[in-house]
Length: 107
Image (cartoon, rainbow, N blue to C red; front, side, top):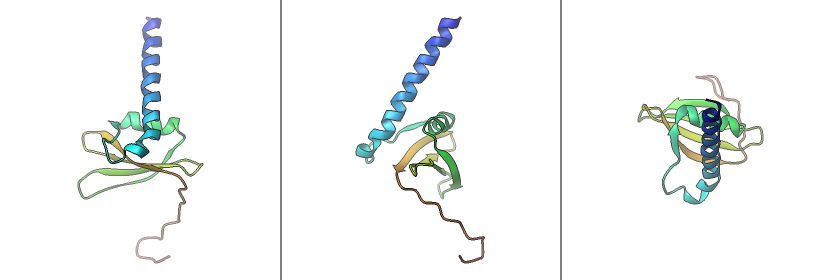
């Protein structure tokens, strides 16, 4: 049974490597097909890339938009549909956080 776990780990590692490569190649293919995977896998990839969720919200279509940011300023924006599939919407560099004003108060 141990060899099955080793094989499964190798397949998972290869898939993760391919997905991470897709993140870096998506810049030239942004207008083409988005990178979409189940939400738990997307979160796992973000953790491997040292990205932390800093916030999320629901858009007018009922899709959750979430931003992941790393300490290095690199960020990723994902959208997650009701069926649990997350798509990489955008990636970038140079993220700067600003403190949000309390609702009803101006900053």
